[in-house]
Image (cartoon, rainbow, N blue to C red):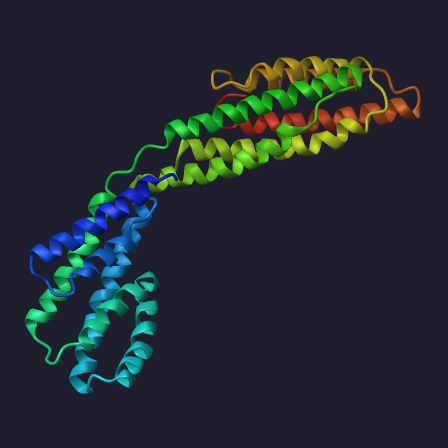
Length: 315
């Protein structure tokens, strides 16, 4: 059984909140632990947003409960009427996430005989301890850069394999490649972008992240690679132009690295395409269809390189 970092913080936070509230001789001290459990989130931004909404909802709930239980007796019908008016108000305040938490605080009012300032102070202290402990524990989040870096390396490796297999197919029209990297890369990109967003949300003032930009760029390139596969299989013959593209793809596959830029390859591709257009016209239908498919292929590859060159990053 694997215990995650968030689980550890939740367990510790609950115990600390309950212990602190009990040490201060607060009534309903268990509610402090409940608040902490609900406010521990997977990222700093999510935790801060949750804490803010729950605090607003709890304070609003205390105001509503004070009014209702002063005007009406402690009765199940009073609770029903209270919730019917309180919940829409909290939603209006955009603190929807705090409805459940504040409802727990509301029910404390049901159990008392007389509303006092001491009781209100007790409830406020419970709220502050529960939310405060959660925020304190969530102020530190482990960096995800190492894990994200592994995704980046694996995706680069798969891109290299895909490009190399494209080259092999163009060179001899035969391949034993099972296409596993195509399916695998799609899944890796989805997971990597989720992880990159999580890393952004662990920094309160960071709105953009180079890793997310990178994975988004790779996703756009990957869609192009997927479109290239049926183009390759539609080729009925190989010729000098196909071999030139195969050589280009072979060299490109070796340069899928953070240390290289796409500009050189982009210029080379455009030069090669210009030579294709200046070559003699096709002699028959098969050659025409082959060259048409190869031209389509080079256009897609140009877009592939332009996406990367626009970021000023590696191929």
